[in-house]
Every structure is written in structure tokens, then in C-alpha cells.
Length: 132
Image 1 (cartoon, rainbow, N blue to C red):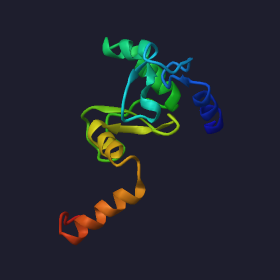
Image 2: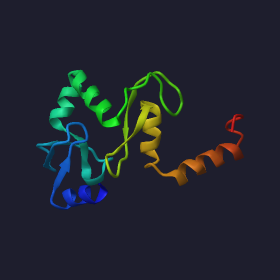
Image 3: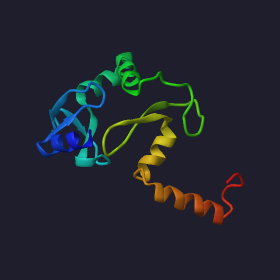
């Protein structure tokens, strides 16, 4: 699967992770996003526009991709606020349903297990959390 996505990138195309359609990788088809590889979102502008209108078809597509319904709670912290579809930033593949805060932390850490372990070690060393 990863090999196919890399082939698409080499020829200047990207597959939308919501609708599954393949488009030219440009600003007409994808929003700019400096935090994503190649500088564009993984969601095509059409799907982004539908999501902005609050269209439930997007959620149904995400649940279909995930193979399960969206839960009420974040799979990491248990929060019920802003649970969203999480995907791998390298491949675009679904990983789980997590809240916006947990998703942001993973994004800021660039999905690096090493950085997250260093953060836990830092909290242990500085008594930042009694529960660890």
C-alpha cells in the first residue's frame, strides 16, 4: 500500500483519504498545509468543503474506512470532546479515533515515539506527574 502511495507522489498525484479519488497534487485539488508531507492536505477540497458544511457523509466515509463506528471517547485519554478520525501522516492510513488535543500532540511530535518517551522521562525526572 505504501509503495502505491509513493508512486502517486512521484507522478504528482495524491489519493484523498476521505473519498478515495486520485487527483493531481496541486492547490486546485488540495488545501495547502505546511505540516503535511509535500505541503498539501490529505483531504481533497471537495471533501473539505463537505466537511465544513457539516455533511454527515464524511463521517460515514470515515467510519467505513475505519471499519467501525466513531466512539464517544478518545482512545488515548478518554475525553468526549472533539473526537476525530486519526491517520498516519506518512501514509494517510487510519489509526484510530482520538480527541483533537491528543491528535495535536501527536502532530507536534511528528508521530515520534522517541520524542514522546523523552517527554514521559522528563515528567518523571521533574515530578511532573504523580501517576507515571
